[in-house]
Image (cartoon, rainbow, N blue to C red; front, side, top):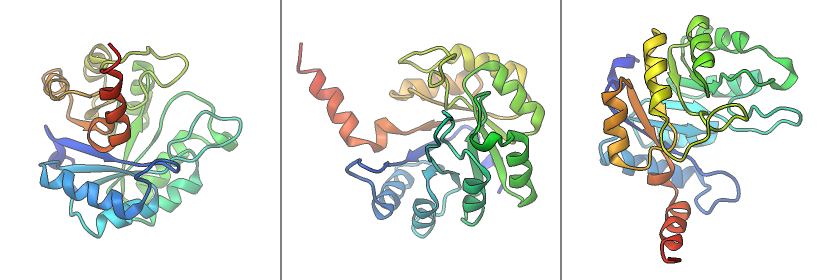
Length: 223
């Protein structure tokens, strides 16, 4: 695929983890269809099963991930070769993985996972949390860099709003296209991200997680 099909566009993250009410590949596929009909130009999806279910219903490029927990490591987004190989068996055009400096399970190397993805002619997206990690991902040769994990590592700045300062700094310091993801809960956030140089934006929970959305409105009743 050409990355340019996503330039200036909205990507919708359609994910529901085990224990969540909408956890179902069929439901995520319908969610992705709704996102497409709303104008989204890409989908971010979790697990081989969800990816293939979505691909059966929606003809949009997919950023594929697989979240799995490993003892002794905080890395859970496409953490090892096991997840990468499984995602390479799907039709996901882009494979995203944790590209932070945190210790990976089995002491696997980020560069080896990146090489594996590129050997199979897929695009690789780095989910990072800091400027330094973005610069390193760019040096390694990632095709896309995303702010997905900003605020979700122990050493990155925690915020309830998109970290536009981080976005701007990354855009200035890397050559790869930069995706804005994280805390994008308002349409204005998307507009602002694009104005500050984001190649595209990913929005998830505020569109696709009704339990969380409902909780926000319920909390508003407690004035």
